[in-house]
Length: 329
Figure 1 (cartoon, rainbow, N blue to C red):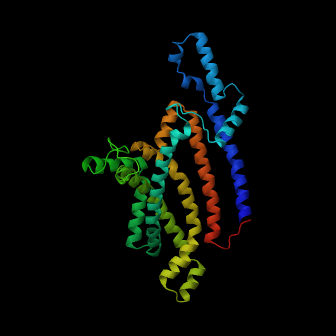
Figure 2 (cartoon, helix red, strand yellow; figure 1 turned 90 degrees about the vertical axis):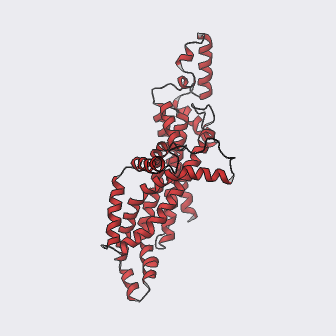
Figure 3 (spheres, rainbow, N blue to C red; figure 1 turned 120 degrees about the horizontal axis):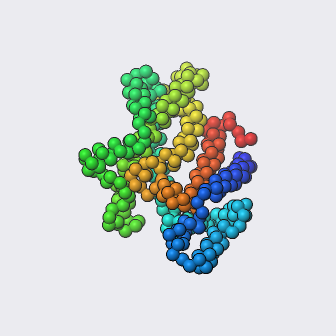
C-alpha cells in the first residue's frame, strides 16, 4: 500500500505541474498588464517620464516580468514551493496572508455542511430503499425533485426573506457583529456560528436532494444482491442484513459520490458565500476576478487542484478499506 501511495503522490505532483503550467499560461495570456494594476494609468499620468520609467522597471523586476514566460513560470513555481504566492493587488499583502482567513472560513463552512448532509442523507436514503414505494419513499422522492429543481442562490434568498426579513431571527448577511468579541473567546465562536447559520442551512439544503436519491438507488441495488438474500436466508436480523451486508456493498458507489461532492462543494459554496457576504473564497475569488488579481487567482486555483487530487487519492484508499477484495496494484 505504501508503494502505491508513493506512486500516486508522484503522479499527483506531475499532474499538478501540468495544471499549474496551464493556469499560469492562461492568466499570463490576459491582455491586462500587471504593472497597470500596481501602478494605475491615472497615477502614471501624474509622474515624470523618467521617474515613471524607473518605477515601471523596478516593478517589472520585482514581479519577474522582465524574464521570458518560461522563466517566469519556474520562478513562480520555485516561489510557491517556498510558500510565496506573490502580492495581492487588493491589499498589497502577501497572497497567503490575504487568503488564509477566508480559506479557513470556506473550509469550516463546507466541512460542517458536508457533515450534516451525510448525517441526514445516509439514514434517509437507507429508509427510502427499505420503504420503497411506500408513503415515506414517495414523499422523499417528491421533496428531492423539488430540491434539485431550485437553484442554490434561490434557497439562500428564501432563507433571507423568511428568517431575516419576515422573522428577523438571523442577520441578512455578513459574518461578524459591528463590535466583534475578542477573537478566540466563547462569545466570538457563538457570534461566528450565529452568522454562519443561514449559509450553512442553504448549503445543507443544496446537498440533500442529490445525495438522498443516490444513496437510495445504491441501497436498492445492494438489497437485491445474492449475498443479501443469503444473509436473510440464514435468519440474520434485518438490521444486521441492512447495515452489515447491504449498506457495506452500497458504500463503494456512495463513497465515489461523496468524493465528488466534497470536491464540488467548494465551488458550489461560492454563490452562497457571495449571497450572504460570507468572507470566504467566493468573495475573494469574485474580487480577484474584478481586479484581475492574478496572484490570488493562481493561488486559489492551485489550492482547489491540490484538494481534488488529494481527495481522489483518499478515495482509492477508502475503496480498499470498504471492500477487501480490492487490492492496490
